[in-house]
Amino acid sequence: MGKLIKNGEIVKDYWTILYDTNDAEIQNTKDKKSIIVPLQSWNRFHNEFKASANHVAVWLDSTEFANQIIGDVNEIPLIALNFPVFTDGRSYSNARELRLELHYNGEIRAIGDVLRDQIFYMSRCGFNSFLIREDQDSTSCLKALNDFQTSYQSTAVDKSPLFRRR
Image (cartoon, rainbow, N blue to C red):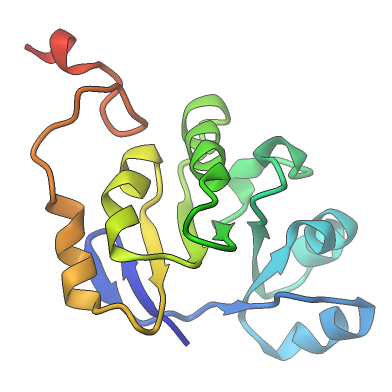
C-alpha cells in the first residue's frame, strides 16, 4: 500500500483500488466500504454501485478520457487518474479537464508511478491527492507542493497567468 498525501497532509488511505475486475469480483466487494474501480466497470455497473451502501469511485487509465464517465461526474466522491509510467503525462490533461471543463469539485487522486518531482505540477492541474510510490519519502513529497512560489501559466488553481496577477 502506498503513502497518501491529500489536501496538503499525509493521511491514511481508506480506499481499495481494484485494478482488474470482473462480475464475480464486483459482487465480492460488498464487504469493502470504499473501492476504486476501473472506468469500464464503473460504466458497466454504475447503477448497481449507486444502489449499494459502499463508497465507489472510478479510476481512469492514461488512455481513457474524463468525458467517458457515465452519469453526473460530481456524484463520484473520488476520481483516480493512473500514471502507468512517470513519463506518461496524459493524466495531467484529464485532471485539468475534470476541474475546468466538467467543474468537478471532488477528490482527484494521482495513482501509479507517482514521484516527488511530479507533485507540484500535478497540483497545478487540479490533483488534490497523491498515492505516492513506496520508494518515495512522504515528507519530501509533501514539501514538493511548495517547491515554487509562483507560476507563469494559468492553471486549474490560478485561473489567471502571472501578467494578469500583477
